[in-house]
Structure formats: C-alpha cells, structure tokens
Image 1 (cartoon, rainbow, N blue to C red):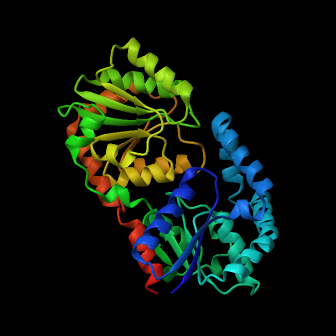
Image 2: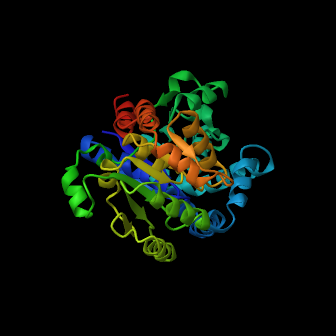
Image 3: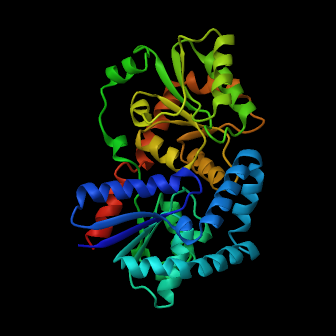
Length: 375
C-alpha cells in the first residue's frame, strides 16, 4: 500500500480538474492505496491563496495582457527568483503536513507545490517520490525548479519532452501521457438520447461553443463569432455555453432573437454534461485552456480557438494550429471568411479530426496512475 498526496492550486480550474481525475482513478482502480487531495496554497497560507487567486482572476478577466507579462517574466529573471524564493519560505509550513501524513508518493499538478516539495526533499526533510504533472501544452521553467529531485515528469506532447531533455532532465524521468482527464470522456453515450435531452435535431451538424464563462474574455469578439456562426449554414446547430456569466447569457439570447435562430441555437448556463455534448458535436469553439483542449482532443474534435489569455493559452493555441487541429481566430481576422472557408470544406474538417486522433491521449489518467503505482 502507498500513502499518496495530490497537491494542486486554485489558479484556474485545470490544475484542480487534473488532480481530481487522478484522485478518482486511484480510488476506483487502486483501492489498496490511501490517497488525499489538498490545495497546497490554501494549506500553507489562506490569506496569500485568497489574494493571489483573486488577482489571477481579475488579471485574466480585465487585463489579460498583465497576466501574459507575469507569465513571461516568471520564466526567467527577478520575478522567477522571487516566486521560487517565496515557495521555499512557504515550504516550511507545508513540511508540518508532510510529517503528519508521511506520504510515499506526492503528485503535483501545479508548479508551486512541486517547488515546495522538491525544496524539502533537497534539504533532506522528506524522502517521498515526487511526480509533476504539467497541465499545459507548452513548457514553462517554473515547472522545472527542483527538477533534480523530481522522480517523474508527465507532459502533454513530444515537444515538451524534448524541452525537458534539453534542460538536462533524464529521459527516463519523462513520460508523454497527455494531461489527466475525467473517465467520463471515455464513456460511450447514446447519441439519440443526448440529442433528445437537449432538444437537438439529429440531421444537423453540432457546434459546441464555450463563451468564456466566468471570465467572459474578449466579450465583443465572442459575440461577433457567435453571430457569424449562426450565419454560416442553416444545417448547423450551436450549443452555446455561457457558464456562470449571466450577462453573457443574456447577450447570447439577444443575438439569437435578432437572428431568429431559436430553432438552431441552444443556450446553456453552467453544465456538467460537457462529455455528453462533446460526444455528439463536430467542432468545438473555445479558449484553449489546458483541460478544455485535452477534453476536445480526447473527443477527437477540431477546434476553433478564440480569446486565449496571453501566456500559456496563446502557447496552447499555437501548438494546436501547428498540429493542424485548431484554427486560431486572431484580433484582425475576418471571422466570416474563416468560418465559411472551414465549414464549406469537409475534407479540411476531417483532416483536423484525424490530427486530433493522432495527438489526443484519451487514456492519460490511466497511463499516469499505472506508471506511478506499478513502480
């Protein structure tokens, strides 16, 4: 039996979702182990966690360029050293928890917890194996702080593996598994039932449209894209998800009413049925967050990429374009032209779907857990 701790931090939902997926898989398939899921930042300092997560949300929502600057500056230079130094200080408090729990294995889905744990391991305070699960499609050096004391790196693609090898991390410690995702995306769904549940026509193509939800990034651009999607073809129906953003939902409804498109656009608030919806869709329109991208690839869906936050999301968007899986609609692009060119070209859409099949890792969670628990 192994005593396992999974650490995450609440900066965006991807780190938590990845941690939850691993937690659920081990609970179900490796029942002889003891496992706990912990927000490392909330544990070490609730005040810092509250202020920093609020700052992240505000930057992402109102001034994404600020977040992009922070992301780039934290790669190297003074801000990178400040971040690493502060995590060393907070690691002292985390040590109390680690002494109490005595883990054999620590799995981290955020660089801060990786840094704290590898610092403690370097100081001889802990001896647990440390696994870092990188939750984006491009590397960032904050993930690699303390890499000499990290036993496993799990990455999304071969390009990231090459970067880590070039950073002097042993090849034997790096595993290209993809980002962990919920087992629900691997389940088979009754297409007719899903269509009936959402009152959708079985004879039309389905577009899953994520508006940005809580952040509502690039609102004007988002509304323009939805309006243009409605005009692309009468043979398409759109499932538009506004998330927790009530203003966005009202604006979606206004656009639908203006275009007399009630029979072709289904507007939803927050939903936990994304796996079911992806199973019946032909294309997804979304920000390129690490988890949404992983889920889309696992569902073999071509992506239309909108409103990436500068930093890791822009790097994700570039990766998806380079791999022929996504089309990134940028600031000055002609939305109507791009959409018409794409949806009038079935060969292009099929090729994008094939490319998603090639780079998706639907068994990522299973692969990660089996590597960790069979060694």
